[in-house]
Amino acid sequence: MKSLLSLTASVCWVDRLWPRGIKKEKVRIDHWLKELAPSESLRKWFHSSANWIIFKKRYFRELSTPEASADLESLYGILSEHQQVTLSIASKDSERNNAVALKELLEGMKKPPSSSGPAKAMAVPRRMAKRRPS
Image 1 (cartoon, helix red, strand yellow):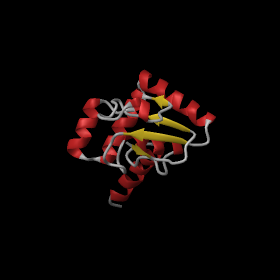
Image 2 (image 1 turned 135 degrees about the vertical axis):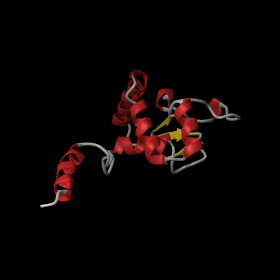
Image 3 (image 1 turned 120 degrees about the vertical axis):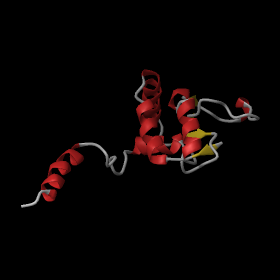
Image 4 (image 1 turned 180 degrees about the vertical axis):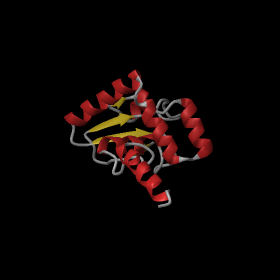
């Protein structure tokens, strides 16, 4: 099991499945938010492609489903009640997993995706104008 924060007041398991060989009674998990885990198809796709950027975009899209939104609301509630929260998972990759993506989402992304938004809409006409011969 991996954790993103230490010295926590609340521990949230954000994986769909419980790891083999670990008894629930032996581990302190305050909340199990199964719907915050990526779908099985997305998880398998990510393991075969390892494309982190596309994984995050698809994962964030999955978080807009009603079930995931409910667990996300629960997580925001947990965050408002506790100074620190640990997002725990069973992934072997501690840098690229759904808990890391969730942490980015909760902290607010540093930079919006470059492929969308008003900045791109404004840039397209300027690029086209530069290409036109005078």
